Image 1 (spheres, rainbow, N blue to C red):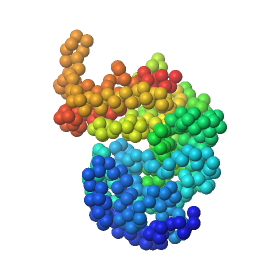
Image 2 (cartoon, rainbow, N blue to C red; image 1 turned 60 degrees about the horizontal axis):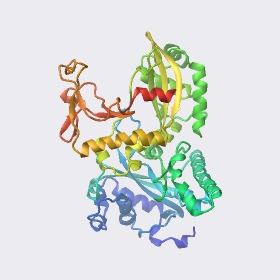
Image 3 (cartoon, one colour; image 1 turned 45 degrees about the horizontal axis):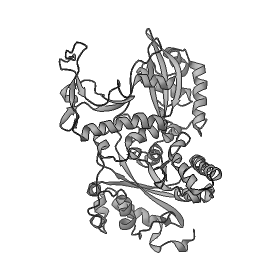
Image 4 (cartoon, one colour; image 1 turned 90 degrees about the vertical axis):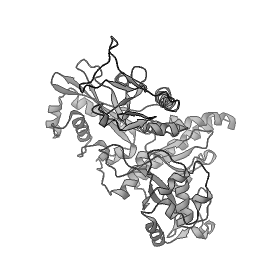
Length: 486
């Protein structure tokens, strides 16, 4: 694009941009708001873009516009300005200082345009080729309205360009989207017929896309987004300068993982963990689940202890989960997935924009399967699991809705557990066994259950509607896990 089309207020020297952004690092968004944007938008319930507006209009003093081109020119280079809210990781063993709160929107999927584009000259790549990220701490456990942003601290910034390896993956993803739309335009002659097919875009391609997705569904204007896992890896290059391990054989497609899983299953199936420990030089003293993940890392050619310490797996959001089986091959236990913010669920209005949807739709899983036989643990193999739209709509959405209804209707209650004779069940600690009436594994494939080691009062750190309880996790029933691995 010709520089003449750029508003002069958007042309900078890099050293000036760095000086301006350094001056606000550590300050709150309100302190950085020198032009009164908070006051101007007073009364607005939702202002997700307020952080970006403050950086753009108040700090850099750019005039507001809505063009699809990159935002500013820095030292003669078109540069996209992107602000991202960061949160503290919920998992204690997370490798990250901060994680992105949500996927990062890049640009609109302009359907009539993209079918005629090539990657290098596309609107998508123009937005990504040269980026300036500004990070702020979304210092609230729940979604806030406009006023809530005022106290969010600005954490820092980085100029960023994608490696050639990542650029190839982004191009591969973009081509999947473009070619999908080209086929629709080829097979359907009228715009009315084509528009009936466009809603397929956001869910039919999820199983193929490595670094990006598209949301929301047509007829809402779909946008390209960087997946939350990938955006977090980018941000972590600023926050920790951590060096992820790179595999000798890089992963460019999900089928690369499947092929490796098949080979490793053929090689190690039927061997005990003791035998695998000797072959791969993995510490057998690790807990069974930690050993299983460490062994899998070694099988893939890595040397770290966690799958997400390998860059390829971290970027595409692969989650490793252990699947222990009984000696007879039946499921041994339910699978604990993640710790949700259940109060936040009541504030979410669109399931497809929810944290629950992002977890199931935004990740692929490697199930590490092993069997307990007498005192030995025997490796059975692995399987990559992807939750399709049908499973998510029928099971995940159902749980999300049921939990929301329980909380908002004030129907949530703590129920004592009884045995088959109707007598109260007493814990070893002497307390009556009880739990909230959240969805259970007996009725839901995806359900809610506590995850603290004991139910003593000191572990009841979660309070909802005045009811105190131990932290509540999202689980997958063992019967569902067995269906998936079969």
